[in-house]
Length: 276
Image (cartoon, rainbow, N blue to C red):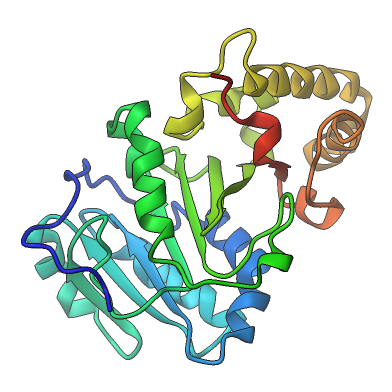
């Protein structure tokens, strides 16, 4: 059962939300984690943690997860009681809204926790403890299936995006800790890949400085983007794909052209993990 606490763990977010703000993250989750959801012997349980002042992102996440597994049930969790009450009219079969925080007050272990734009207000030093707590609520999986850049069991997706969902960066974690970092963008909005630096999750945003791996990654990505400029005449998508192919020569990417075409690229966590 879920741990019991006298009060929710965490602090309220600004609550900013917009319809379809998290569609890129949702699309990736459904594609990458969908097979694990379908393998679950019980109906998968997902959590939208800190969904904000309106319930749109929770409603949308459930709809997208059900394209992967129609059995999925989702709980939207908010630390602000007024936000929970405002969301109650949107409840329906498979969708509930609860008052809570990082303790994740739902029964049993969960298949997915999405925490988007939640940790930006916390100090970098607090992130590891929050990750550990949330990962402790995830369903276990086969350790043999959780090699570098792969996920075992339940999944935590924690990251940040802009207000209208053009640019995202998120970390995917399982019970063993962080596995990958994904950069995703609407390609028509992109001047250069390092534009995504402003959306780095809290664990990485202060590490975008010389000497840190994430800074080197974005530097190399910009160089590959510049070298792929001749492909711009074929469209931003073709330029992105060419740049990511070049990037793959030096960085451990975990995805391929099918995801790159969506304006995404995923790299192993250990390649970008902060030093020190």
